Image (cartoon, rainbow, N blue to C red):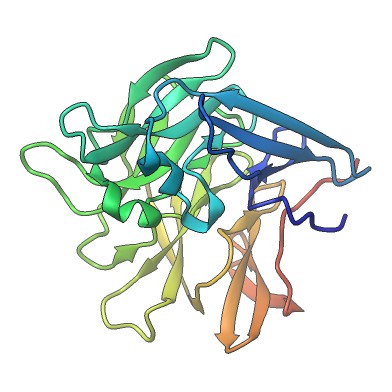
Length: 277
């Protein structure tokens, strides 16, 4: 399937194995978000669009968040819920994220307890990752209460329950937009850069058990430039991209059950891991 110049960024997959791609947002009111769903098995395409009343009016929203063409709006795999940017209710110069119910067309709850930032920094905003069942998402934020912590990985479900999953900021920097769920929802793979390790983009590959919250550093260091980890359908392997030298990268397969890593492709960019129709 050739890439269309009107497409922006691959944002993920639906529960029925269609690719979600963001489209340019028209700078007209009412503000809306547009996507195209691609069926890789037959090339079929479906365009969807919806509006969110909590989108800010004015130029701030037009400028942000355009972090890697993300637009700050991310649907879940069932296409029923979406995470989107929302103006802070306590400070108009700040923004947070919130959950929107698409079928009922109404807001559900805000993430202001764990994330709030200036619009000036919105291009560096963290990107959530949805579980494949669409019932919860992971988000890198920090508590905004009387004793705020450093950036950690949080788990948020569609009922608004928020749980801190990690306590790793003392040993390294959690990359805010490069985490992904296994398809069985039992693990999340993410990246952490220990202090003074290699270059600015060097990171270790880490997994967390979403049930026990046990964290495992896989002792695999890569130069992080590409997409989040891409999991196999059985939840036992995933792919990562290592930019090992300028203009060259390799795709590595990580098997968490056998504790092995090996390269499978050179100068390639993985998109997904499908099951045979």
